Image (cartoon, rainbow, N blue to C red; front, side):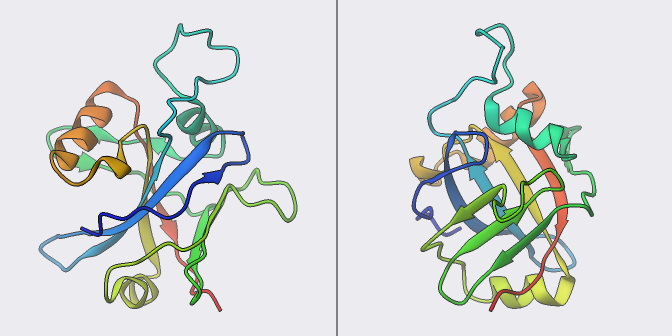
Length: 167
């Protein structure tokens, strides 16, 4: 797993994002993975600390992503109305169906992809997006445990998103 997240980015909802591109090994080959992390644990507007859902997950759910569930394997819903791309210059963009014109859900620069990531995403035509407060900048360590924990707590937004190769 590539352990260097892309440079921080302000999402359309005002939270800061760290972006990490990785791959999830499966019996049929690796699935490209994009991890969107809210390192500041920004609360959802109007939650006043009552709900565990942060602003990032709330924005993802409003846009049509689902919640990943851990039962016992990670289950991720399809999100065909979203899209993602990675340009040659390392700009990673995620678009939701609710984005204002010219303002994508996420655009992060200088995002490093593992070797073959973009090619595999282009061949498959999709990637998996996982979003929440998952600590991508904390290093790999117990990363998979953190993802499963967030899924079990209902605080991990997820979707299988169409991939469009960038320019």
